[in-house]
Amino acid sequence: MILYTMMPSELIFPYEADSPSNQQMVSYQGIPLLVEMMDGQNVQVVRILSTDPQHYMDNQICPGAKISFANLEGLSAL
Image (cartoon, rainbow, N blue to C red; front, side, top):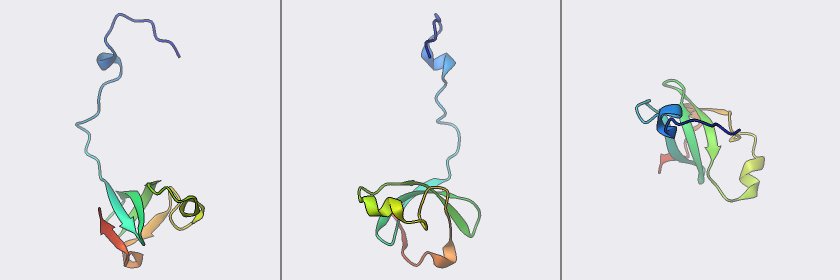
């Protein structure tokens, strides 16, 4: 897409630094993940931060998967 305008890009595409983010980097069973806090008991995987291709094949930690805090014995913040 080409946008022909005299306006600076900051006015067209504003930076969203003010929006609160409830995302956190954690390590789950030795796998670095970016998760989003859903409520007091669950997190949702946003992104896998690992370089190991086998981690991307695991259905328990695929993006969009919900993990309960009860099952997070291997969870630690990075």
